[in-house]
Length: 91
Image: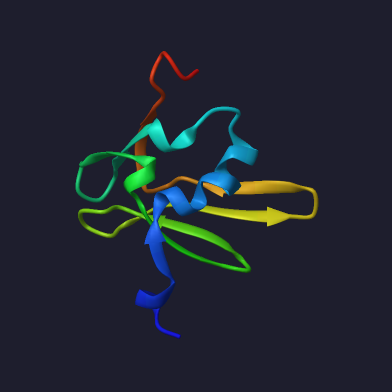
């Protein structure tokens, strides 16, 4: 199975991310550390599997986030995100 076969958009990670955040995370906007584009999380590209999720920029495909479930919690790495905007009507 190729990476292209596993690639979905960020909406496919909504269930996992909603367990970490208590609001609809797909409307939050992240700014890519690689190219500077700001995009709703729902438009990020998801590469996922049993080990977790890798979300990439829809413009340059730089990794923005990694999310994995460990024991009874989650680990989220957001090194590729300059900042995350949460609309006031959401938070």
